[in-house]
Structures are given as structure tokens and as C-alpha cells.
Amino acid sequence: MKLNWQRSTTMSACVLILISSLNTASACTQNNHIRPAEMIADEVHELMKGKNYKKLDALYAAYSKKTTSDNVSALSPFFSGIAQSFNVACSKQARSNEEWLAHQASLSAWLESSPGSMAARLALALFDIEYAWYGRGSGYASTVDAASMKLFKQRMESAKRQLDALAGPGKDIPAWYQGMLSVGLAQGWTHEKFDALYDKAARIDPYYLDIHYTNVAFHAAKWYGSDGEELSAIDRAARLTKGRLGEAMYTRLHSTKAQSPEMFETGGANWKRMKAGFEDYLRIHSESRTRNNYAFYACMARDKPTLRQQLALLGRDLDPKKWNNDLQYAYCTTYAKSSGLHEKPKCFTRSDTGAHFCE
Image (cartoon, rainbow, N blue to C red; front, side, top):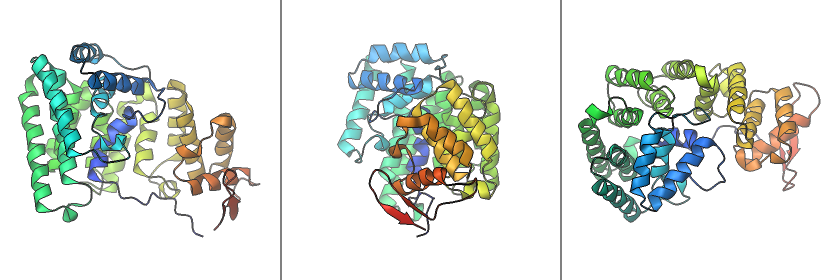
């Protein structure tokens, strides 16, 4: 049996837009969260559910110039927490249109109760971006019917109008730039226009990590760039965040880009840098999810000593659910036990299920 290391699903446009929140704040509450950014997102989510708009405005003001202890701008998980109520990625089932409208009504009520709230205005604009993708649906443009595409364009233009109206007060707010960059990605702006906005955002706050995920997506071959542009965008994001994150941003971006041995074999990713990035992030905030990912990528890179080291450090925290799939988990744990640095197992068995696999 030939192992298929690459994920089989095609990443939709909607998921690309959500990458930033899923990686910086993991804006869903299905798991027990311990990362500082996640805890902020969870707190904001609960306040939004309780319609505690006064406290939300207070937190927005407090987080505007604050960085979490895991070195990301606090406003990023703040807006991720607000979005938890409607992000499809936070639920096993797609939200109904009624649920989207209910959340929109809550955001409108927030603005009505606090007409001067920049947080509420930004949240409403960001909502329209996500609502546009919901109306469009996933899949390539050729698969989207005319009515859905029209709805997508109308809602995205609504988001742009709202952001344009906030351009003056938003000129120093990274969340405003992230919203506008998301619009630029959706509307297919020219490289010159998009890049100029990204440059401004990066000067204001390079640790509002969402801007880097959107920039990398824009420059990817599946959007408006090329493989070379995408790699350059990843390198630039890593340079801009090196002061606080070391190589962690390089690792984060490459881990969302690909998950197969080919990523190292073709030169698309440098394992030495990714390895350093895992070490950097574990120094910033050590937890088992990152270490499970570290072990997974060590296996992808055929770095058996590092794989063995991370599996040993994980101990009881080794969790198959945090790996790409059951087959890869079985292969990698067997590979770690095989003799010799370069020997690969031809057959392997999952210890928890007893399922037996052979190449």
C-alpha cells in the first residue's frame, strides 16, 4: 500500500481566509485551551454570547496596545473570539443562515448600545467578509453558481465600504488592515495595491500574525502568485517577526502550506529552520500540541533522532488526534522504533487498534 502523506481535501477559499484565526488563536472552544491567545479568544467569545458589550469595549481598549505572553498581538484573538459564534470551522456542521443573521443582530446591538465603538464597527465589517464566503460556498470559482457569486461580491463590497468609512481612525489599527487585506484577496487586487497595504500593516504591527497568513495566501500559486512568491512571502514574515518569535513564524506558515515529506525533498521548506521554529515556539509557550506537531514534522523530514526525542518527551501526552491521520501516526511511531537512522518500516501496526498496514 502506498502511503499518501498529503491531505486529500482541497483547501477552500473560505478556509484560507480563516487560517489566521485558526493558527493564532485557534478560535474554537471544542478543546481545552491553554495557549494565552486562545484564552483571550475564549474570554471574548463568552462575553459576546452574554452580550456584555461594555466589557468588550473595555477589553478592546486594553488589548489595542497589548501583546499576549505567547507574543502575538492581543487584538487578533480578540476578534477571533467574536467570530467564534459563526465561524464554520468552529463547528462540525455549517451554521445556518439564521445563526449568521442572529450573530449579525448581536453585533448591531453592540454598535447601537455604543455608537462610538470602533470594536463593534470593525467586527461588523469583518462579519460581512466571512458572511460573503458563506454565501459563496467552498470550491473553485467555476463551481459557484451565478446567484452565489453575486451574493459574495455584494457582501464583500459591503465590508469594503464599511472599512473605507473607518480608514481615518483605522490607519493605526492592525485589525483594519487585516480586514482590508482579506477584501483584497477576495476581490483580486493588483499586486501593487495589495503589497502597499501589507507593507503598511507590517510596519504598524508585524505581530498581528493574521496579516502574514493573508499575504502568503495572496502570493500563492493557487491565488495570484507563484510558488516562488509564496516562499518569499513566508521568508519575509519570518524576518519581520524574528525579534519575538525567532523562526516560529517560518514554521507556522510552512505547516499550513504542506504536510508531506515532499515539502522537504523538493526544497520547498527547510527542515533546519522549521526545527528551530518549533524549538523557539516551545520556549515561548511549551505545550503538548506543539510538541506533537514537532514530532509529526520530524517524521516527515526523516529526522529519526529528533522524532525519537520528541516522542520520549511527550510520554503520555502523545496524542494520535493531533497528528494528520491514523495511518501517519502508526507509520511514524513504528519508524521511530526501527533500527538504523535511515531504515523505514515496510509494515506497521497501530498499538491502540491493532490495525496492520504494509506499503
